[in-house]
Image (cartoon, rainbow, N blue to C red; front, top):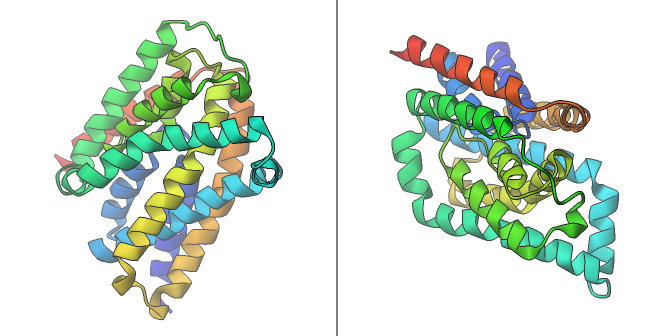
Length: 266
């Protein structure tokens, strides 16, 4: 048993779970850290990252299982449940369509540390700009959102196809720009992650099924559990944080990390 390899799997799992729902780009962090620690071959690492992302999304399902179960249970009869499901579907569409069309080209061109670092810096500057606007919230709960609001947030989410942008950052900041309160934008970002990440995980696992084998099961399990647990902590922490704080600290973190990565790799 290679303990160093297991430690690397644990580290990447923790990184995935801790960053997936924060506006700092989990994909960007995985690319940077994976490159730094030289974890597995590129093909195997891609599959590993798919598996640990599933761990992160299951943490959302675990935390919100009561609400999600209620939506599924009452979907046929309850209008609110139907509207909630419709909003998730509409919000999911832009990224799904653009992802199917451009994911391969983007992955070939931009899934490298320096382009990620540039996206981190640009995203940090965008966060600072949006926070400076002091936006007024018009929507204080998800039920008050329109289907058009969900579509606009979905369009913002599609920017996360660029590694380093951050899916959660794009949806949260996009939601705030379209009138959602900080708390509602954050919560909707969690829910919108469910169809997006399940679809992406299922598609990538199907496409890369030939790379799956039982020899890697231990590594994948370690990363999966680490991602699940660290994501639970990150989600609960973010919910408490947004109740009283803005996102400027994440912006400065992104900018500092981006500069450090560019300095290191150049």
